[in-house]
Image 1 (tube, rainbow, N blue to C red):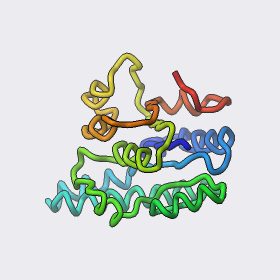
Image 2 (image 1 turned 180 degrees about the vertical axis):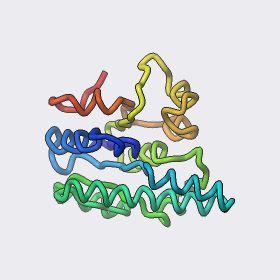
Image 3 (image 1 turned 30 degrees about the vertical axis):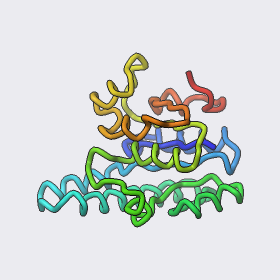
Image 4 (image 1 turned 90 degrees about the vertical axis):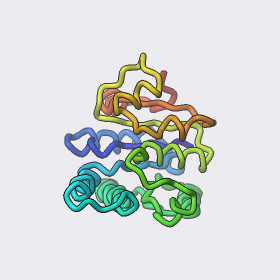
Length: 195
């Protein structure tokens, strides 16, 4: 099973549709869990926090809601995909041979001890989910150009992945691929393996 995180910035072009189509065409149902970024919805949370000065706990919960909104958008584009919030529901939908879009359950994240900080975004949450689900691979699809010569730490320093990502994958048992949307979504062959 593979976790594919689609960055929220992909909604600014036709890249999102191409990526969703690529997942649909190149994977069997029951093989993939898609993690949505927060995109413009999360950007609005950042702006609201700057203006109103509310705490990071509130902002974190609002940012998770942004991911949930993006999950609804993905589902609106790909109606045959299933939305699942809890880990139990994800497993159930995968067992029913569905391609799953994760709409994170806030209370489940709280119970897992996920900190309320902007250092943790959907990148780290995708890594957490991949570990919990024993995924074989985590693919982060970005709109940014990816320098394949950079380490994960280097990608974090450039803001390509969030600041906490390296901590979330320090003991990972899955393969990690961080790719540009044009590179990944233009492929007509399976997304796996990428080198």
